[in-house]
Image (cartoon, rainbow, N blue to C red; front, side, top):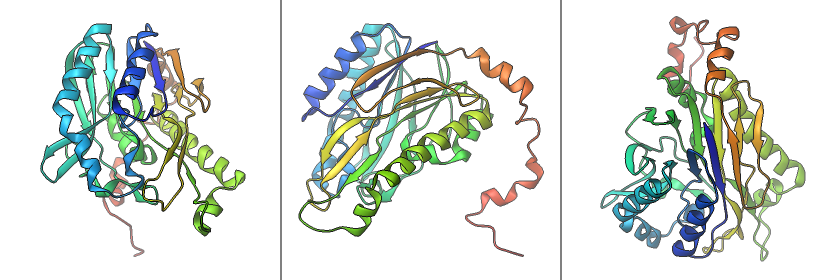
Length: 299
């Protein structure tokens, strides 16, 4: 399966950004194209502002548009859209299009609420569960950004037959305000801390690949985006999109600039790896009841 990851920046408007995305898609000849989280606009969750809910008003038009793009280029396309389900109920939703048809969707399950990432203000937690999406290129385990940190989500997708794990994401370093001292921001912005955060983000996903014997596709945005509230200067998105093989090996790894990352994935490699590393066979499911609790108290 030939895959292309579209790693790009925000161009100041939805129209310009979408046009650039389509231009980048047109330059690939891959079967599967994966776009970054909330790729049509800036990452607006840097602050809490009701005006951004208006971005979801064109949700149904967006679905038709990306279906058309999927059909035009004869591809399976993984998108990330701001879904307006009803007044007061919005989701961060990944739609998967298969050559013009809707193959399925996934509503982001884990929702963060941290400085610069105030997603609980905008998004209702997903209610579709962790269900792989069947497409003409394979069975895709699509998750979104904050889901990256949870091995449970990856494992459930694997147990339900996903052939690859896919994570559209938007993550970066907080840019400290220039007009005042913010101790938390300053602490997190030392070169050492920045590298630790990036390494942790990559490492946990390499773990998902190894533990489940699956390839992992992760695409992130790049560029600096201003925080209109003025609480932060903004966020510098670190890019570093990557594709991993089923033993956590890098098949492709982007830098911090805009680019199209293309690579071929052999889905049969997972079958071979699982024969020699039978982690699923040796699971002690009789002893995992504690995982269904928020925290396991001492007896």
